[in-house]
Length: 118
Ligand SMILES: [Zn+2]
Image (cartoon, rainbow, N blue to C red; front, top):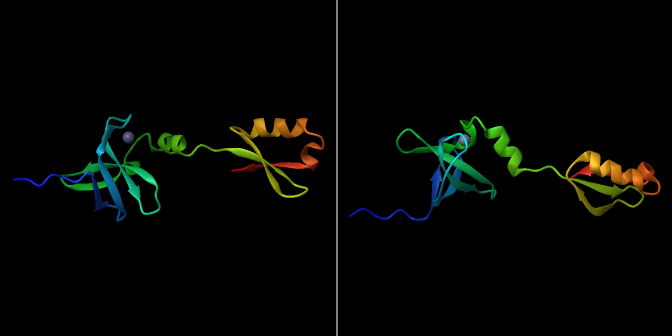
């Protein structure tokens, strides 16, 4: 009788990274490749795909849409710092332009505030 594959399993990818795969996370990437999601030691989620018969590797390595994938996962945010005291304001903006427009409207504008990447 075949042993049932555990839902979570630690494996070593072809590129050498050790990850924990969630075998219940089967998905089809937008590029058409069948992928599973794994988590690295640094708690980063990455899609993996089957290479050959029994080897796995990060799907970032072969996905033609990898760049888009990464962008989606890591959205850039902008916030504003009060340069007179170093306090980060709570406002979070999706674009640098939005943040700069907000700064311009404040008293003192760029003399008091600076836009920083979050
Ligand atoms: Zn893909």
